[in-house]
Amino acid sequence: METTGLVLVGLAILVGLLGVIVPALPGLLLVWGAVLVWALVERTALAWVVLAVATALVATGEVVKYLIPSRRMRAAGVPATSLAAGGVLAIVGFFVIPVVGGLIGFVLGVYLAERLRLPGHAEAWPSTLHALKAAGLSMLIELGAWLLVAGTWLGAVLFG
Image 1 (cartoon, rainbow, N blue to C red):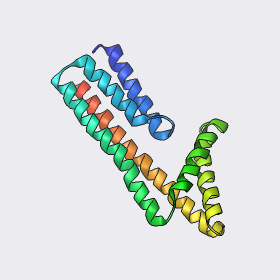
Image 2 (cartoon, helix red, strand yellow):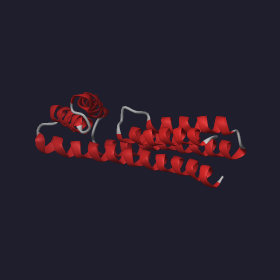
Image 3 (cartoon, one colour):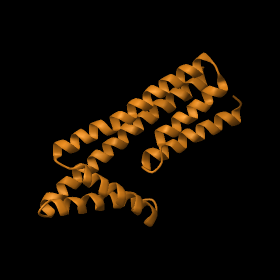
């Protein structure tokens, strides 16, 4: 692959990092797609191995980013409906307040749902904090998978 193609694939991988931070973008899938395009153009044994590794990492990352945080949420007693409310308000907040609106909307949505479900602020706020920790853990897991895929691809390009 020529330098321009490698730069474009690298940029797509970097844009995938935004998908880790901005929940509306499919970050890991974008990274996997960039590696797929690279492998289809390269058509070498190394490219196919990198694609296989990237596929395994993305699949594992996607599964683990939901399993571990959701298990912790269930243990803390926070229902899925509160997370759904947080997700809806996160999307609205993302468009209403650029950059930080998603986070503000998520916190507000979870808090309001928990406030309706529980008797008072003293009970709703700890549940909201559990939801925030779970969302943060999910982002860290996805970031880890992104770093592993990006590092695998970059290593193949530089040293392959």
